[in-house]
Length: 549
Image (tube, rainbow, N blue to C red):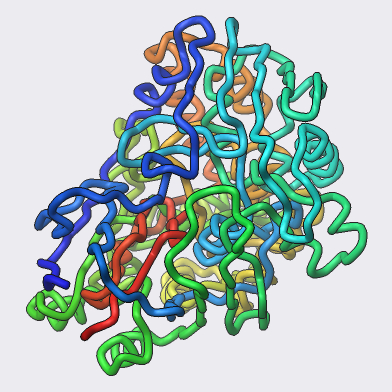
């Protein structure tokens, strides 16, 4: 195999409007079928397998012809996986969870980050004349890992389970559905509560994955992992490792690798060393200070360097007597030096926000006109004096290593204005359950939220019962705007609605963005086939490792 040149994939904002055009036009049918070389993630076979020096988002390093491939890939994660389930609050929000779920579960529709369009997955095609009434035509050759056949009824059962599971990503997907009818085993009619020009985008997200209701009932633990995907779960140890084995009955293009083994290694230095000595093939989120080691060794490594569509935030429980006080929140945010926090927590990978929007860095319709909040200790003390705060200890909960680092500095900066804090450092799963909407037991949450290129994904942290709502945020105008925006055909009008949402959230200060992060991924030069995505829904289904002579 030719040695791959250094690759730096800067994942820039993609406009969802281009994707909508792929399905618009009065119900134009999409006939590209997954399972061929055009399916998302499937390796291409150009005459020259050597990739260009810089890959665009979604590009794939194809496998060379007549090569021998390793049976197993070893992938290092920066954050452990406590559980992965689209029907459990917080069960599909982490980076590792998204990547694993992409391998084991399928959706009706997939989004091609390279082409900027929607492609069929479990649906072969679809049509709609008004963005409210949709007909999906389904594959007839798909089976779940347990041998049960996938039919239109499988989608109906998934949606029913979702509506019984508020606060989950699956609930976020199906909440706008009014009715689902199986015309026959392979034809599905979906009627929405209102027009939604973003519905295909919603169906392409991980929360829209189709699950097996029968498997979940038969085994409440491992039944959650039964899907129709290219891999199945063969071994799992919570917050330690996940082993996926190739599904040889997969309906689509067969993966090259027989196993994908994901391991949680929290220390960046350890991930660097393990990649260098060959203990692993892929390391996710290495430190930028280590990148020159790999960038300067183009014979042996490939580097993907991008700003993730993630937001490391500080959130306030809006129902708590102390943090629910707007003057207290104003005092806190003006006490913080975000540049110091970004450097302290993220090192060279941390980047303080350049505006005040609580929105993904590459999410469409981002309101860049909102000024970033600056530290002003005199103003902070004034707001604190006007608040109901009376010297109580306020708890800050954090579960991600970078956020845990940030908490120490946040506590120090808050002491400067007279706010006393205690730190509850735990794991992401505990943070998610402690801050769940309707049962939020936290005061200040120091956490991370993943975003998507589509603005519709921003419903998750901002709507009541949203799977990512960590602050019990519930603003009537925001709720109404989220219902209105998807009904607006004109992108300019839709963008204005989303930008107004960001203004309201900015004024309410339920969340404040602390920093964004570069999250470089480094692989051995023998690795190809993976698709890196800015929202960390990386597609490793067709990743491979070429063996030497």
